[in-house]
Image (tube, rainbow, N blue to C red; front, side, top):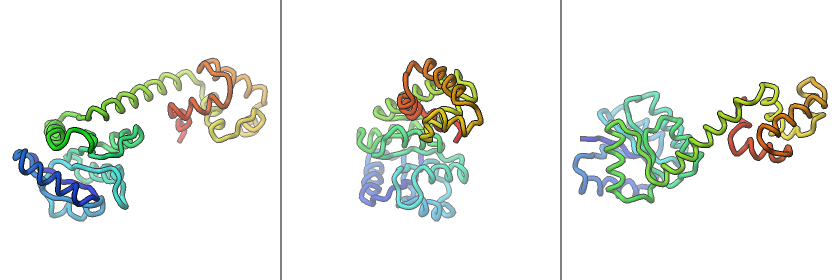
Length: 218
């Protein structure tokens, strides 16, 4: 028997999932439900024995990402299946980084698809619905591209990219921040442009934002 807790701020959604699971998938039991991350952690002391959390991302107060991160700290053995209509690349990556083993869209496939996802995650597999799999692949490609690109830059070039993203876009401004000459800055920027196949600072900022390069020193 797979025992799960559902965390979602929509009572009708929780009731619908619980009722449908109970009537069609007797090997899965929703043992408790919470309308927020805060309520989940209030319930934890008296909710022993569950092995999975069905967790929405958009919650009042503590976000789904924060809830997942804390749950993995307090109950690392509990598997997390994100179940949400918020399916952007940012939200998917955030939930994976927080420790979720699976992610399925609320719009995908109904209760049978959800039950399949629950069984897969409970069995030790990562599970992503069709739409989510495409997002996960794009995130993987972007991260791989970022790693490939950033490995080509010197530390000084990385710092210049970061300063460009802070809108210190002139060579004089950057030179003042780094204690080097504007001519040296121009040389570094030309090297960066050549490596990326671009021609301007504006293109550099767009490229860095797209691949997350501007966060490399965050």
